[in-house]
Length: 151
Image (cartoon, rainbow, N blue to C red; front, side, top):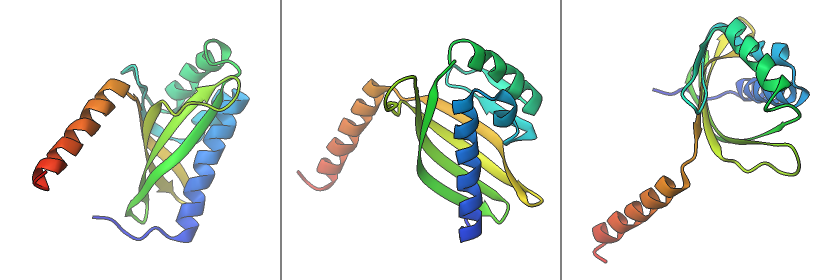
């Protein structure tokens, strides 16, 4: 069941995602983690799960000081679905780069919740795109559609 996304909610959701990107680009683990609920779940594409804002912050200190130092985040919203007045699911494509535009190599799901007047992410899942599986799935979908159309 979905509800209508209000303009105010849409703006608030955009602001959360923009702050996440800005914090990532600044290498600011504290500001990045502040966009998550106290008990948020955070799953990265490698299958590692972090639980809670403190653990998200602690893990990102290492990320920003080492292998993602100086990286810039690009995020493209694919869909936004309001499950209730206080819960919104956002599907995005994203990527990181140090120079130039980032390739959007991952798909993310954000479950955002309203805590009073503030929106935060309660659950995050990041999945790396598998180009071979995407190609196979696209081919199979087209094949099935042609068969259904009698071609």
